[in-house]
Structures are given as structure tokens and as C-alpha cells.
Length: 215
Image 1 (cartoon, one colour):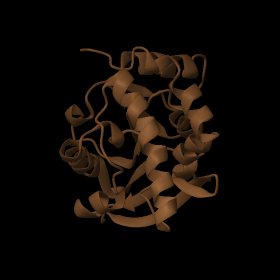
Image 2 (cartoon, helix red, strand yellow; image 1 turned 90 degrees about the vertical axis):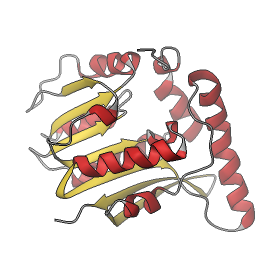
Image 3 (spheres, helix red, strand yellow; image 1 turned 30 degrees about the vertical axis):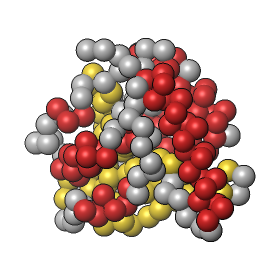
Image 4 (cartoon, one colour; image 1 turned 180 degrees about the horizontal axis):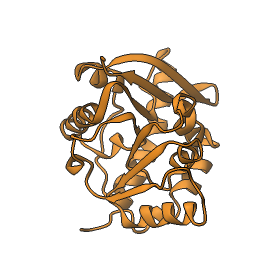
């Protein structure tokens, strides 16, 4: 299994902090206020997983999934010596191979869905929705869909394409326009209940979208 993040994985969080002025980390952590002790919480494409570590510190039963061994190794270093209420389960796996017979109170997909082309991304959203319990939530944190006047939308789009180009060149991630994630969440039966934006240079660059599955 080729690790496409073998190089990028070592500097991923550093680059994201520099590029976003730490807005990305705040976006990833935006919906942690919804996590309760003993909740079953899954993080798809966890990366370095600072938000997953915080969920574990809150007493949640955390499962992390990543196809990159480099990213999982960074995550393991982040939890080394930690004494959580529940052990963190780590899966070195394709998210689509995570069985849906085990359901989660919250499913996080932070800056993960953007690695896919549109059709596969749609399939991943469907799978994430299937992993959530009835009444549970799916959270997507990512680059915000362009909004505002024409000039603002141009700036938002260019800002996305700078990052997308780098990851396409280094990791061979899919190269595409910005996805409107709420449309896909609603398409798969989820209801949008909260959206938080994070701005850079006064522009809504990132959003964390929380969608609930019908009980």
C-alpha cells in the first residue's frame, strides 16, 4: 500500500498552520463542543489528529482511520504517554472498508474529502453517513464554498487552488474545484444543524459543517 503522504505527512500540520494562520486547526476543533464523555467518535483521515486527541481527553471512545502510515505514526507520537479514559483505536485502512455495523455518535471528516474526485467523494460521504448512528452527526471541516461578491469568490477560489496545486503535485491528490459539502450531506439524508466559518484576510476561507442523521 503506497503511502502518498510519506513526505507531506511530516510537515502537514506545520504547513497548514502557516498557510491558514491556525484557522485550519480551529476549524477542525470547532464541533468538539458537541462531544460528550463516552461518545463513540470516528475521525476519517485523521492525519496528525490534534482534534482527535482532544476528543479522547474529553472522555470519548475515539477511533481514528488513515490510509497513510506516516500520518498514523505522527498521531501515535501525539498520544504517547497519554492516559485517556478509553484507549484510542487506530485503523490503518481505507475509510470505505470500515464496516458500517458499528455506529458512531459523531463522525468527523476534516480536510479529508478534498483528496477525492467528485464521484468518489460523494461515495465517501454516503459511507460516513452510514457510519453515524440514528440521531448522530457527521462533521465536515474544509475550505468553504465560495460566497460573497464576485471578487471575494475569485479570491476564495484562488486561495483554494494554491493549496490544491501543492497537494496535487506532492501527494497526487485529486485536482478539482471547491466542493459544496452541505449539498452532499443533505443528499445522503442528513440535516445541516450548524455551520461555523473561519476567516483569513476578512474572507470566509474555511467552514465546519455539522449535519445530523434522522433518529
